[in-house]
Length: 300
Image (cartoon, rainbow, N blue to C red):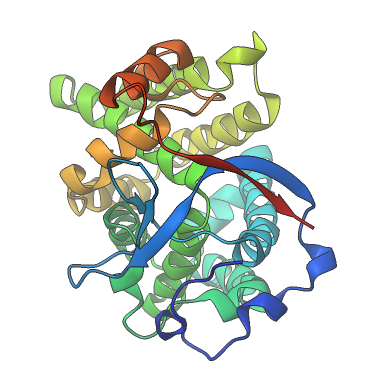
């Protein structure tokens, strides 16, 4: 099993032993044949694969993925709590101490799983440029709504650790960001633009099933419900506006390398294109006898 360079992390770890083998989900999948990883000075981690035209951003490996999945479950629980109970939401928005305590509790719980996988004091350097923009958004937003800076910045680090170790989430966020950014350029109405983005996202999610991916539908609609309820609070509106201004959208939306690696994803219509359309584009990029090598990867 291949791991990132240990210099990236905040503590010395035996990364293969941080999570016990029996805790990592058993399964197999077809993946591109790994060649090498590079750590460019301008930031990020790039993985190169045999025959691929671009490097892929980030360096996911089973132990980190497992730890992140645990912390994502906690986060989804908090989102559902706010989405289902408007009184909890109002308490969080109106009483700063409540929100600080809630986020501090989440941070402490997440640290129990994620501490071995945090990047070192230079940690922003090793994240993808998209995650750095997400970090900027989260930090500005939380500071504006009254969260203690230390608590808010630590939550931002946790959040982008979750995203950088899960391409399914990162690519979706980038895709949705492009939808929102495009519509916001032609219409200055945040709530209408949010509704449009949600509708477009749900159309793109799991199209091959012929129905709705209920889990992703519930997560997305809960989050949008929270935002729309809180939009009536001036401090929240101001926080969202300033956080959006902090984003460099050209770094957040997918670049050509991201588009390339999403062309073979089956369960989401990236850029509103079907799997068949994207697959044809991927094949057309290569000579017919020079397609990238794929291997069967199994976690036991």
